[in-house]
Length: 366
Length: 274
Image 1 (cartoon, rainbow over the protein chains, first blue to last red):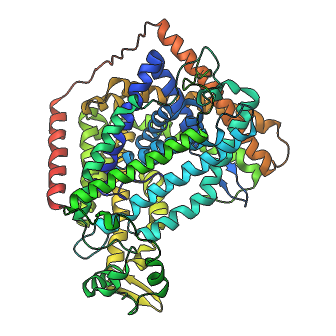
Image 2 (cartoon, each protein chain N blue to C red; image 1 turned 45 degrees about the horizontal axis):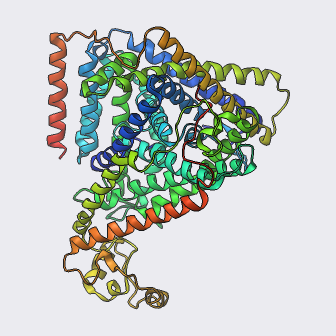
């Protein structure tokens, strides 16, 4: 999953560096505030640990071997923010010193594995583990599922970044300048390996380490188990709303940038509507984007039938009552983001912190 | 590269991976101490210079420009006592195996004008160009990165990161991470070696998975203990959260010349590659 140099365009690399920067900044500030003088030794040693986890080979069903990324274990033991920093540091050492992952693609690799991986692993673990006891087998299942989900989400993001390259960057002859495969090839090619081998490796290591810690070092699991806190530890629990201010600014900036989408001409490949089948110009454009393969003359029966099954309230990100397309994009982005946040809020209320207050302590960080 | 192994080989393979990392670091350290052209350049010039060339490779829309930077990288390696064989084993072969495998299907799958047809198989002009772009970019960027590491001590690479205004805390964390990778590597090595010496016969796959998970768990616990010990040791030496780095580099006239050379190469590459 480590993207080397040359696979992503400089524009994509710059975007993902910019996307990762607020997370790094917030995570470092938070760690310094919480840990103060412990920040440097804890993050250094744990980054070294994250690096080494990737060296452990384990046998997988089917006769093959694989290795874990270790982001799930870091997120479960240290919390998501420390995990972001430790895995990012390990990735930098790998990129510069061991040429595993590119220097220009470092921001992308961190975004996919360290940021997306740590946050999704933490969220899934917390939702499934709920307020179960530290020794509960539910926590082992939670670690397994969170490891599997985190790796596959990271792989999906990687596949998406690689898959959009040929659409956006090609030379005068039409030859892709960077990763050559479109989304329809990049996503299955990436996901087959991760849904099977890599996902399984992360799942086995995450579940196995949590089961081991339950037996021998249960104190290390209290940090991400609010309501079951032990005294004398350090607060590494997830931040409250007020403390995630930089991330809210980042979301606001992304919302404001959504009208940039208007610049993209035509319809995204494979997202054609019934109207595109009828329009001669749209048909020509689709054929040229599909390697000269023309669309069937008649509208496919299934498409015609299902297209009337559900009518979106805001089709094409443009509510009917709005004159300005740009404002329509902005409104759609705000509404979509709001709905996602609402779903997570409800999920958090239902499955998350049903126990005590949000003041988890980590006993393992001595 | 062995993809399918017997379960009992898992400990062996993990030990082999660890040994390879140690050898890699040892060879890099040895080469960075020799007296070649790149080794003599101030790291504060070399790091941004080589990174500029990596960026130029990433931005170029012409294969000839990427090829020219690749030739320049080989010449720099030759004058820096870094053998082509070393680069071939460390960089070009892995790039060829990994990126080559990824790039090869693009020859046939990318739509475009047919260059060569054999039955249902067709190599297209655009497919050939896109595969060449991917392979040349990945190979040249990896060669430039290898030149940096093989000609500069790790501690100097980190110190020169300050040129980019990297926070001192970040530079210190990176330096300590590198140091503790080898400390923990030693711990993991001893753990696996002792287990291997107590194992008779082949380890079943299930036992192999348990061993890997338990070893990582022990390593995690030891890491936290180590970070606590390091923290106490740092505090005992007066550490109060402020980081100060010694900046003992001296810019020479030859470094200014090299800075100009790197800048000129990068500007030309950006201009002709646009």
